[in-house]
Image (cartoon, rainbow, N blue to C red; front, side, top):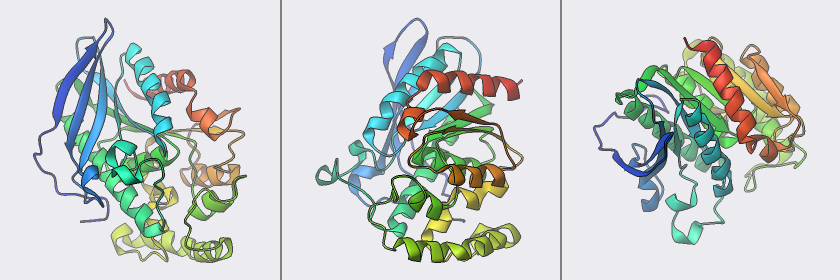
Length: 306
């Protein structure tokens, strides 16, 4: 098994209706994480499922939020807008969401090493794939129209999941880029990763080995390539070769202070220049524009899905 594979089990997914309107039904989901976790609270995955009140099979977008609980509000707004367009959605909660952290860690948790970040990315990708398992079994979901949409860290997780799971037909990646050294040190905030165990100079020196690693990945496969550091294994550029022929839309902020334009262009070019939309806003400001995202996602899915 490779890093982002998992043992498929028949774990039951709890599924209950909590609200309904003339246009949608809102369900809550919960299921055991198929990935190993660092703490007991993280062993249960939670999510919200919004389903249009319409007959027939519908497309589904799995929405993955950014780092921090505050990023959930625009996801919920996005889901409610998508359902009006006849698109179902699942919002699920990352292992770093406060409801999945021990009480003492809520509000102040941040990974302290590349190895810990890798554990979180691995768990998140596997949990997202478990949602694809569930969605593929639902009578109301069109299995050929399962897409992912994620912002910031959620976009990076979504890109990896799509790269390793052919069942995902389309991906919308918001305010993300490629090359973790550029992401960490190239933005206006200088470093977006408190707890770095290496300095700027050390990080850049390590990433001089990244092109050789990417060549290994292409020639031998990810499972046979040896990274100079764990961050190579969750860098979107590592997975770009698996997304080049797939349906991808990038949405990025012109004034993003976290993800530099160079970082964005690194990924865009590696993906062989898929459609990209530039929003005149900041990092958070871009992914909070739920109405714009809903329109662009709906148009994008409509343009590629018959």
